[in-house]
Figure 1 (cartoon, helix red, strand yellow):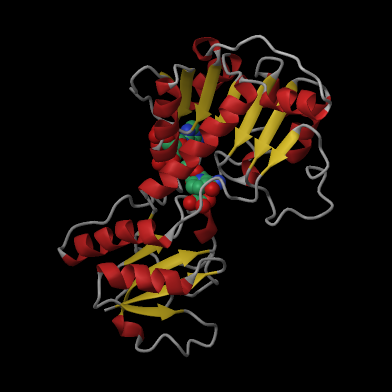
Figure 2 (cartoon, helix red, strand yellow; figure 1 turned 180 degrees about the horizontal axis):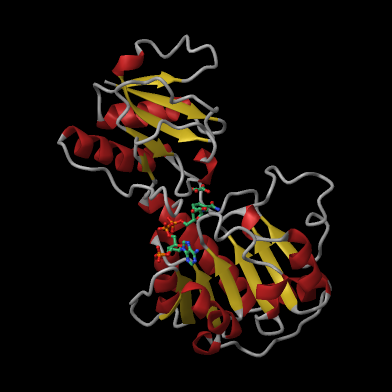
Length: 312
Ligand code: NDP
Ligand code: OXD
């Protein structure tokens, strides 16, 4: 039994070791363009991938599942994956914790006006600002799945006024739920700090645009920790430059690494991180992958499987 690894950026040796610790009899093979390292294609039952080369998982007659190395699966689009083989998303408490920290950090940063304190400090100015109250700060999370629901629960623990927007209606303790196209306007109108944790699909691409940004109250903040193409870059810059938005935090971009001449780099109201809101850690993520391999071996379905119709 073997697993075939194909990723641009992930550390193959760490994955090999982490999986070996869980499933010692799992052969770990690394994809190369000439196919030389694959060995017997019939022995490969699993794929493990982030942005694999097109066709890397073709012609493997016993392939049972392809595991995404991330929570998102847009990196698997147009990769000529074999039809009918389930694609399994990564759900890893380590990944969830990272996003939680990122969302809490930036929400508190904006809520407590820490950038203004940093400016005062740099200018040698002693100036207190009015104390903000979390109970009166309206945070809105687009995407109430594994990551969005977790972030919402932890924001609630700090007593933020939290709402979420998803495809289907949700019942989450203390979180106001909006859903579907019909629920978007009301969700945006009440949201002072907008957090995007949506998957990238044809329906969600470009969702942070001039129209949706204009529906946020003046002085709002945007935190995008999902995918770059959720944002129409020029619309975001326009909303910041006009003063409608106060600031934005971006972790993800249309092109990564962000090109050196992109106008986001010098923008004074944009805070950026290099797709590092939460990094996949092999030592924790391998537990989830190994768990699913055991399920498949026992004749059960892995989870969560991507729905090809919705794309997430
Ligand atoms: P889930 O699939 O668990 O959740 C997705 C959520 O988005 C669900 O609530 C879903 O609604 C909602 N949604 C999907 N499509 C729509 C739509 N058209 N309209 C409204 N809501 C919609 O995903 P995760 O929480 O695990 O991950 C979310 C994303 O976070 C990933 O796809 C990835 O892109 C990004 N990510 C970024 C990282 C980073 O470091 N920057 C790290 C990890 C993930 P419903 O519940 O009704 O299905
Ligand atoms: C992910 C990511 O999808 O790292 O997990 O972006």
